[in-house]
Image 1: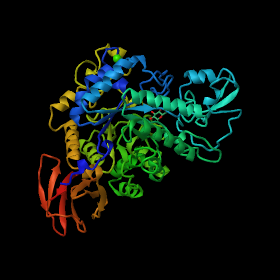
Image 2: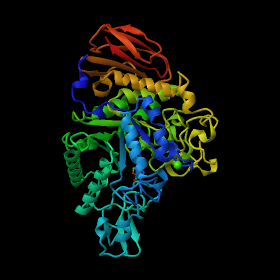
Image 3: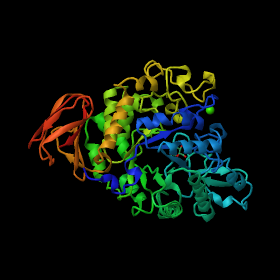
Image 4: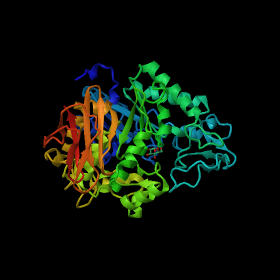
Length: 550
Ligand code: GLC
Ligand code: CA
């Protein structure tokens, strides 16, 4: 094997990420809400699972009308979560275990309770007025899409005291910052320094495309938005060393657009989420046809060398269908969200396991794809044990219920009175803690949790899976998805059956460099297959199988 570890590959290219909502993870002081102390108790669990980097959703002071994405003080901790000392202890405990930790940088807007906005609305000539985007009318930037369509009718809201409208891409209580104002840019750089100095390894940057506005455009991904990102990256590299800290872009766009957020490979984001791939993984499984995955990956250019896509199945938001046509959206809604309460904005507010009707074969299949396709995978907390959702809760709280650690009181999440919890534990015969919890799954070799642990182990053992090129192999069935990942002298053949039928898959023209396919995953059945000019694979329903070419 080549010495890939010495090739100076930045850590995030091979890392496994895990997304955490602090309120939902573990309550350390038993007031019913998760916090830093609780998270610290569970770091060993994450390390054991094979996680390399955790991403924590906003933990800053906030009126909490958008789960902390409405920040009222960027350089502080929401008292519910603990103190700055608790945060520092978390960083220390992460470092001790070799775990990286990134935060969420909500750069595009503030809460309307932020002192800047509070000052801005006192008078038109107030000191912070120009920190926000104002207009005497609500007619500028016509045609710019509204993101939270269920709630908001316009991107402008009227401010009665100063009798002008302010611009907001999300909720009306989240006024957009005015990035034309250099003071705003500098404030944000100060925020970045504050947390990187405290030991964060980087940020997931929220709502990146919307920083600047310009008449006659979609007001997304404008050149000046890239300009600010370049300024920020340069600052971070100069202050903390090249690639020592990372920035990861949330940009819900097609690959032709998101690829631009890598800049020249050294001067913008190191990582960008791949939203369109996420949607197509579900679509392909529903249609039992891999072509949508292949098509989107063909449209996806390789990232520059020191960059990486970040891939995922679910996150803390609704499963967004924005990156699909109207027809795809209708199909996805009908298939995965037959009840209206399951739908939200242009998406679906359900978790992975209920989306798959709790069918472990399908849940494992999607995870097998996530861990073998290009990109660094990120797991939404709770999906590693197949947690359920509660669509009767408000907004996206459906997927943000307390983590189910055990079958004890409050699912082992908290010792508080159950009525005191920030949200009720899932109470459902199939998905409640009596059925689904971490302790049970740790003790069960055939559990989803142990399946994921093994997936992660294998992915780390075979660098092609993180670093290799992808090559699709033709099959005689659109639901039989076969591809190769190759890196240096290593080839891995990945076989997935997206259909519920058994079948035979014959592949020719495979260009495999060896005599034998040695099964490396799943671990339990270690078959080997001879490589001939034609390879015949027997596929069971929803089969996933990884082979090393020997
Ligand atoms: C991002 C977050 C989402 C939040 C929104 C507004 O899309 O993922 O949770 O509501 O930004 O800040
Ligand atoms: Ca607490």
